[in-house]
Image (cartoon, rainbow, N blue to C red; front, top):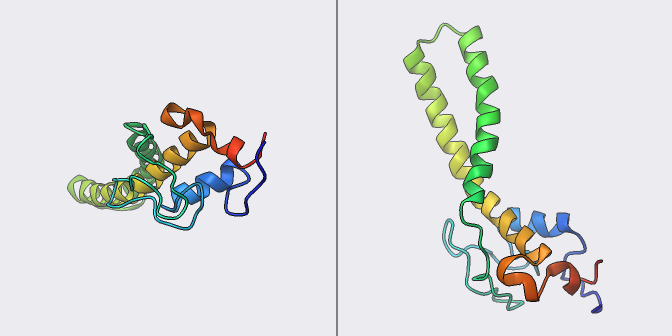
Length: 136
């Protein structure tokens, strides 16, 4: 095992928190994304290669799952407690859903990348985060 470095996360939760916040899951000091959903190729501080991730379709599934679970009760409440027409309720639901999905995509992708890094999945298999951090 390697010695613990204070900048490395000590748990999966810490790495996930950094990824969800859009920071490097390894050091937490720099941005994980160069653009909206495009991760930086390499961390500018710790040098971690982020091109190894394979987040692919999982972040949108997470965003859709969360949005659907929030929108279902909203639609039920709108239908039961208001006299709004179906068209107005659909417009309200559409705006809320689009805003939620766009707001959740980047954090979901950051969390998936952090999870893959911590567990040593895909291209990160040679350098799993928990081994680097000295956690069994």
